[in-house]
Length: 206
Length: 206
DNA sequence: GTCTATATACAGATAGAC
DNA sequence: GTCTATCTGTATATAGAC
Image (cartoon, rainbow over all chains, first blue to last red; front, side):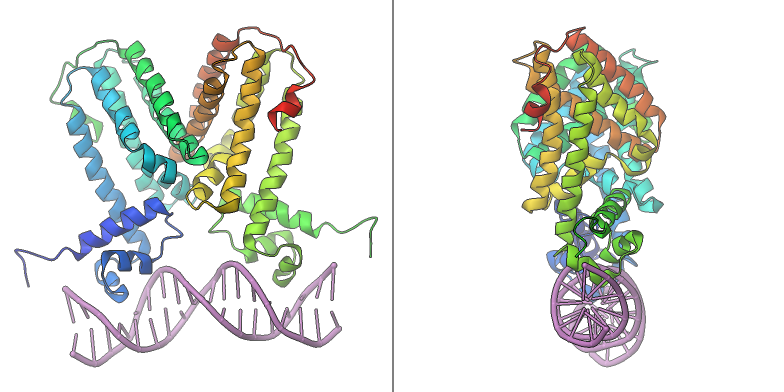
């Protein structure tokens, strides 16, 4: 029982599933594909995950953690505009992937959203965390009443941008659309600085 | 050989596939499901379509025709704002479906876009027709240089709106976001009236 | 904990009688 | 043109040796 240094097969499986499901889709990614990519024998997968959906859940949970790290990173900026711009720039930084596979979160919400069930809710929560985080930022800039609408507009635009980029395989579209979005952000929040610096991270993903 | 009144099995299959693929996804919809919904024996499907992808192509072709009908319908309006508003209202009219299944075109582009291949291109063309149509309208309103960017922004917003609506199962979001979009349209094209009325339909889907 | 072999189910596609 | 029966591949999941 290696308690101290337990092996990383479970994490390798999650990592492999994450990549493959993003590059393909949940339903076209087979457990055999995942096992092979993770270099774990197929039969052994079931020791770590009871079902394919359980792997999907684990992948989403992992992405949720990564998202929280990003929130912390972006919150190092003190102006709201900078924080929100970091979110937009995060998409810009992935533009090649967007053109090939679309938005990692949006594609999950699209595919799983039609089915309903537990995993669909988890995917929706991921998108919800993103919206809530943006909402908190807009609130901090003094846009209290409109914060929800503004946050939804921002994420909706990023999702739409990602989908058109995937559809037309045109990376340039990310550049143009993100520039427009950054201008829009500045127009909405100006140079507002965050007041209650410490709390926003926790509020966003409560 | 009933030439005059040939039966409608082929059309029933396309119709059934259209609905099922929209409600579920391409990969989770089986030929057996389609055959059953169309009330055609499974083996007989292959008389009309060589492969499953051939059915997908036929469905997209069908949607393309419906889109052209809609374009003609919307072009009965003489002001550009009205025409574009019809597009937005078309989404509003489907809001219940959007909340359950997302954008009919966007979900296809998302799912098929990752795979590439012929059907992905056909789906992309569908979205492309929509963008081009909007572009022609913006041009007609005198927004010649920005027409492409404006058209992309409009369709991107509609796609993003649809995805968030599906994700959060919140129909109200369509109302709010579409109102914002209609205001945006008016701000961009004002009360401009279309000049070359007759040509726009053909240009849009050339 | 690990892995081979396999059960079970169902997908897309075909053969061939009618 | 139509439809039953079925081939073939492959998916998820399990059994059970190690």
